Image (cartoon, rainbow, N blue to C red; front, side, top):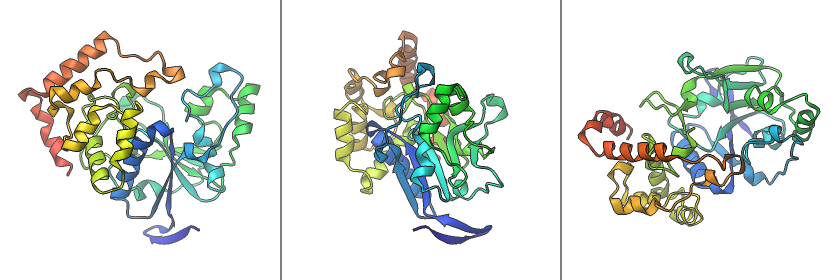
Length: 315
């Protein structure tokens, strides 16, 4: 049963309901995301990995309209799972939160069915639907009907996923600090989105912001929120890079500080995205591997110390 608590602008629903697009293979990133939310939250929070709903959806006939990932269409079940009542937040699993989720949860709808994140003008990106605040009472989504509309040509994958045409009134009212795409500024960034699939911190040591994610992973395990056994199991199953266990056990946040023996653990690691159907062709080429090697060498030199104060400022 939802309760309401006093807020400067009146009342606010609790608990905060966060639904995460997910697969079982992503449960460690999901748990780190959940830990980062709870770490800063001033309100009770419920986090629900959407794959655990056990819902199967029909596949559009046209291959061009089929989901690009196993979790692309999961978000359209949220109003139903919420009982078509109240608010809900949708997040992708490749995210990390640095501020109180209340700031996102309490945004006014002002007549909108859905709030999306606007992007900085210089990025030239359209409004982002990887972070959304949903008015579940207004969004009477039924995925069977959505797929039928795709099959009739009334929707396309583009208009569904990138324009969210199934919502009548969308407002890009979410500050980009709540969907910071591979950008981080200490004290300003509210949510960091690791959008570069080939460099997400749990599969690659090459992400320059990866130390932030590893820091919360270490904390989550030390606080008993996430079991080391789950991390070890997912390394064994190929969902996480093996060197992550070394970082966890030795409390090493930055891969640039790993010994060669630890880095060597990843020599035969094949990231999960290479196994995904539509992403099977996403393979780092020679140039990308070379850039990664040069980046690791650079981060071991004094030249890279210019960004160390930023890395130390998050405590």
